[in-house]
Image (cartoon, rainbow, N blue to C red; front, top):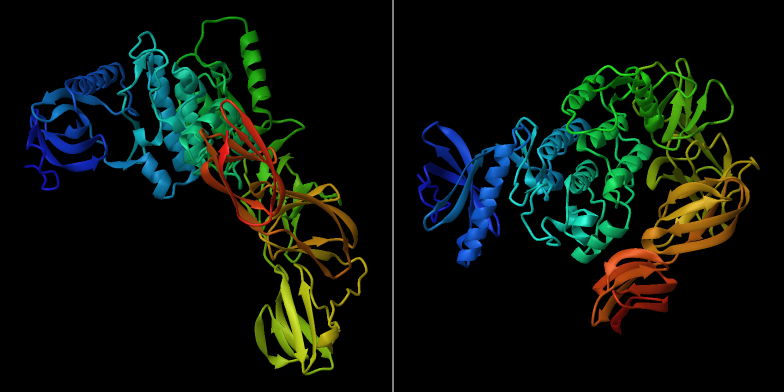
Length: 634
């Protein structure tokens, strides 16, 4: 019996008994039905009647369904949805009966959950890679690889579907130059010429995996034109913060290759790409890694033998069976595997095992083998050999020691703060105490519990006298007696230690990246502080999202905090006529077009560049508040 939610559908479609609606879109619907002959559940795809306006449209959809059924007949893979039947129901148009997969579409999972673990994401990507390589080995190009065409079953296994616009590589199903597919996942050659082969599917698969692993598109944009421009011209965006469990250098290497603009520069197969992704993954158990590797079969001609990550075992090279030949190809393959793998595999030798060292909180100093000089700060990619001893130190926290053993991947080092009891005293005594914006019940002198892993603000008040001081991580009162001063003459108390660090505090409308004397100190947010040694420092301040760059010199006094002020933000709205162009600020791509879209920039002088298809417009503007640049001729 038909479901009441789909009253316009018949009780029977062909020989199938309709049960309920599974989903509906602008062009069609999918219903759950049962084949009464063999009691098998099927999903039936139908075209909405108002989408089929002419006899030619109905013929086109029927041909697409027929093509999908024919393509499915050539494929036999557990990662590809099987097609059982194609037909036409009088009064309802063409229909396609296919395998019913209880589960959720991958695009819905990426957008709204459930949150997937690293293993689950790699398992989905691995299953899809093998399915696509199977299709390519049969000469089938999907042409519309995207999360919306993937169902993830209740067992977590993916199923690739919708081969309606697929083509045989030895046949022409559409005119050359005709664009078919989804723009956000299209390859550069698909956009430029409308011609595709299996390497175009590999590009689209790379976009899918990028989005699955990071939750972001590699080519974001506010309009279709912007997205297409970036796919054809720009590299994939840099993910910040990096994807957990994947070495940042490995991430960039594999995605720059799989998303290369030239087809010949990409991976030859999807499984070759996924092997490199796995070798860049550091937070994956030994058995989990083997399980995912087992999904990746060799389909077609792969230029490299299978490489199993050495993060847990010795390097293993598994080549395809070949006739007996000289041993030279085997040696060359092994050498090439090690050369290509670089720092991503664990192998014996002086370079050791390269691992990503993390700490919570980040920014901890890493020392090796009792050396006094640090080798870097976390997060840090560091080669390790058996017996190497690490010491992780961060101000205000208890240090951690660790000895490396082959096969181990250290988890993030969780640094515990040092908790001490500190005396707070003043002259004169009897001052009320506010610590971190909380008033304490007793007056000075008193003892307080002090978390050395956090910054603290201490304020003492007695009548019209007061004292205030900001303590950074690792700084403590240390038994000092704080002199109270008249409120009208209060100033920061200099440190008793002339070498004690001072601090830089940011005030303003946005975060900036700070370089001091050429050393990158990371990002500083409004209200946050950055420790600096006493003396004069040359600062370089940048904020790419807000098109801000400045150089300054500051003087830091021991124990005192200097305030660094950056401008506020303002909005620029850009609109050109008669056409639109790509908008750049100070030579940097804004990601918007001159179609009335807006972008936030720091107050100050900027150069606005609008690149249209036939002309370029350059405008120098002083931004002192919101700006609307409309009806600019282009």
